[in-house]
Image (cartoon, rainbow, N blue to C red; front, side, top):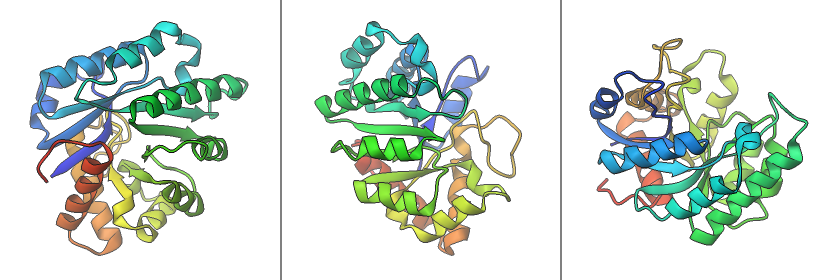
Length: 250
């Protein structure tokens, strides 16, 4: 089974979104990032059997967040098809003069995840140490989406109980660090994702991504680990089912 554990599904990004979803031979977990996309995720999970979702407030959205944003999360987090709080975290790549505000928004969402016993989907860019220092204060489980740090940090997050999200970048020729991480860590600690519509894997790099391309991520992992792709799909699907409490047959 293909399970894309992190994608963005929006009518703004896809003129043929219904076709994209129906053509995916597997499960998608659509991620919310702000008030608008959180509402879209709710609509999608209610309309499509093979779409699950996460609700969250992305660190790039900190200046657009108000009390109603958090109220919406709490009012909808117990929808049976909302499987995590996400995409949440820290991003110092574009803006780094609001670190305290980002960290506060992050912690408030971690508190919600704790309150409702939900997994989390974490975004961390140029902020891996702060992300780790905050997460180790909580007893949560989740995934490090689109992981881009070191093997050493991957192992530290795994010790905390987190999975490493691997997407299309693993297929890029210049992605040696991520490829080495995939070789070194156990398959039981890996989740497949696409981050659609971004980061299309080879052979589609430069084109708009879609959840069906999860297959090419799995294929690359099978090549890196010298194992059958079926084993990759079976184990990573099991990982996703357990982490997000998906009510599925393997």
